[in-house]
Amino acid sequence: MSAETNGAPTPLAGITVIEFTHMVMGPTVGHILAGLGAEVIRIEPIGGDRTRKLLGSGSGYFPMYNRGKQSICLDLKSDDGIAVAKDLCAKADILVENFRPGALDRLGLSYETLAETNPGIIYCSEKGFLPGPYEERTALDEVAQMMGGLAYMTGPPGRPLRAGSSVVDVTGGMFGVIGVLAALEERHRTGKGQKVVASLFETTIYLVGQHMAQFAVTGKAASPMPARISAWAIYDVFETRDEPVFIGVVSDVLWEKFCRVFQLDDLWADESIRTNNERVKARDRILPQVREMFAGMTRDEIVAMLEGTGLPFAPIGRPEDMFDDPQLAEGGLEDVTLDSGEQTRLPTIPLQMGGKRPGSHVTLPSAGQDSRAVLAALGYSDERIAALTSSGAVGTA
Figure 1 (spheres, rainbow, N blue to C red):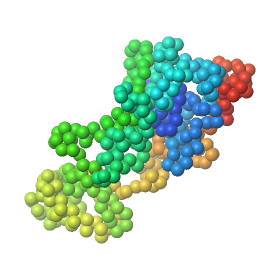
Figure 2 (figure 1 turned 90 degrees about the vertical axis):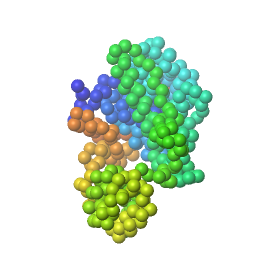
Figure 3 (figure 1 turned 135 degrees about the vertical axis):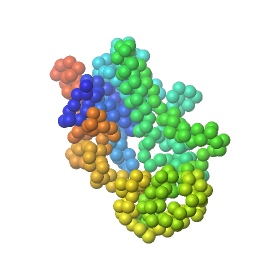
Figure 4 (figure 1 turned 60 degrees about the vertical axis):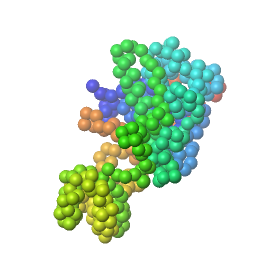
């Protein structure tokens, strides 16, 4: 049975995670595990992870993916810093890292080395590529999207376009979590840990697998999404008098409902387009009439008519709109105190477990704020902690 804190489910309570990460992919693994109740101790360099200070589109990385963690700063170029890291790993259930291939190995923190003293450790490496000809390359989310066909499918023909979030970083982190949880379950039976590797490139390939399968089935290459021939006649973003709205009519039953809701009696009376495939062939005849109708209505008028009908629809939201979304107000956002002291709300783990949502109020850790407490929990004396901090091997807030 799951333990709970503040009413939130914590199924991973009692699990300790040591995290050597930066940017998005690795921190995503730790954030999800922390959100499910694990104790996550994040190793940062002296002075803090540089991700904390990114500008522009990177300014949200740290607060989004590092909530609910403890922070300890270590100088991993010093013998004392490495010794502390090894002591932490010796008692950990899980290690997460997403540095370049071989970076931790050269520090004496490889899976093989750590498993000698901690055979139960589950070692999650988040990389650019799984083993193969590309595995030594440096990859980024955007590199993987470009290589793997996702950017090609997202932009219009001839203009590859990355997706509008770090979708491969985050999804690759999610696959890492899946591997970690599977390894934990196997450890229950065998008592042994293992190395789990997830990657950006292969994650991208999984995401575009539907388009590969389309080619395998039809013999025709998939067209980029903006130029695709949709499987349905009404499946698009429609302009209104103010803000656009997406509407999809994806079955014959919904076609009848669509026609009745918007009083399109002439279209419903046309028996030649009662089936989906015939409507797709008649798109050039159907869509101008539908677009003209929507152009004379407001978004809110259309939404009001569609609400409760079962027809798929979506106002076109912006990220900043989500703070006030009534659906997310029911547990989709959690209170967060940023390292500046400012209060905000950010997305919680998108799950419900036992009828409850993970998450509770969290404070984003400042760099090294938990160093002394983490070392004391390892059994270090006050004198030894003072020596480590004075030597610069350990940094504190």
